[in-house]
Image (cartoon, rainbow, N blue to C red; front, side):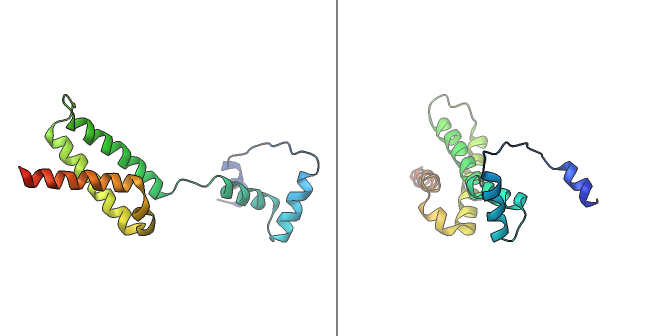
Length: 128
């Protein structure tokens, strides 16, 4: 694809700037050796970063742990095979987070909660 074709596929957003802001953006762009568009995108990326893999995986952990805990209550609605799969997936995600993001995983509350659930399962398994 040529450059003009690529531009037509991008999202476009019309924006009204207050008086004087265009010049401020232009000066900032020049001082950073980039276009005004690149300057605006860099500013927006800084303010609104994409969710990273760590955040996405911890969100999945929250859901899995809720499902596991629900099953542990009477009338939970999941069978033993479902729970075993949820637990295995939760354990796998925790291991992945600890490998890929060791510093964040060490202090994250969601990872800690998942580890507590895993430890409780191990202890209950030893008691049975």
